[in-house]
Image 1: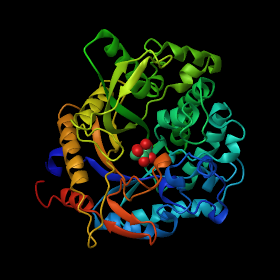
Image 2 (image 1 turned 90 degrees about the vertical axis):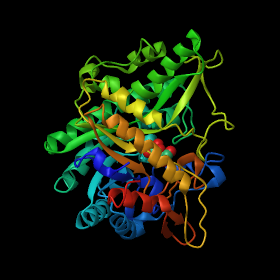
Image 3 (image 1 turned 45 degrees about the vertical axis):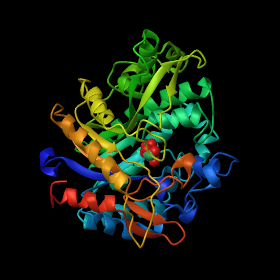
Image 4 (image 1 turned 30 degrees about the vertical axis):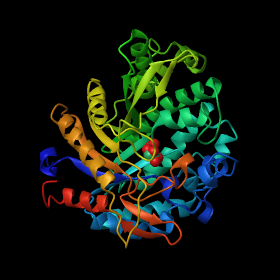
Length: 447
Ligand code: GCO
């Protein structure tokens, strides 16, 4: 495996997000986000962890960007916090918030690192949640206003933009299952939240392009390779439904294909929230899409889950290798997902905007020999290379994540970083997987 094989134009990077790393949740005029409220509720986050300090990227960004440079990583994906920039969601802009992101972007550029900016990575201003958050159609205007502020502020410096991070996860987790902020449940929350997210991914794209026609603007989608538990018709059909839900729901309306209602009849409920002009409004031609893959899911038919009639069979830990998240290590999944998205005619370019793994790292004598993570990255990259040979659209790969950080409901137990963070001292230690990535990027040797 060698970097050369991917071609000279292939984009290599690493990803992070604001809420998971920054800390400083109430510093310098920042408003509350839905996560600031959610983490204080009982039993939502493992060990009652909060992200209020996290990796304190707010105060450590220079150290972390210096490490990025030292590791030879040329592209850095991070997100902007909406409530840091517009504390109440709409209206007054917080200059200190904009200044913070100017500092990060400038620091990247000074170090020869290209900033890749995600506009929304799940930290909705709480003020907007009081008005219904993603379930309120007014979010389309609120979001447009926020995107305009960001695009105008950073237009001279940022060339790569991503509108939403994984809409399936923040609407499904936050408005259907209630396991992510704001903790709402059920179809009456999920269906409007989903539809408004689909509108916002398009409106966000159009808003940036109107201000910055030359920019490369995309959005990101979570995806899992879905395989049926058995060859039975029932299991195969269940797998098709889960695939529609997890992999097709957000991209297809953006391509003008509408919602996958034929596979998921319950999506008909969306009609209640849809205006006649929406079909056209949802359709945009992203310059690229980001796909984020970690694993596969094995799916069987089940009568116990209404609407979807399918369940995910947990990995058999005696037979397969899995990460600390209990996610099966299944490198072919990333190959299959690239193939799936490559098949859409309307997709112009594909970046892998996240891939990585959490393992229980041990810091021994100042060294973290995380050979599992190294092996994970190498085996997934082999599949990315395999996909590159059949997909002319595939153009980049970003590891999740730069540093260890706050893993949502899992708190700090899960460590995805190429860099270890000691949360008591904020000391950083590059893991051996991080040094491995550096060697790979510098083509020191074939790995
Ligand atoms: C995501 C995420 C990250 C997670 C990562 C590991 O799901 O988009 O962007 O926030 O930390 O996926 O679960």
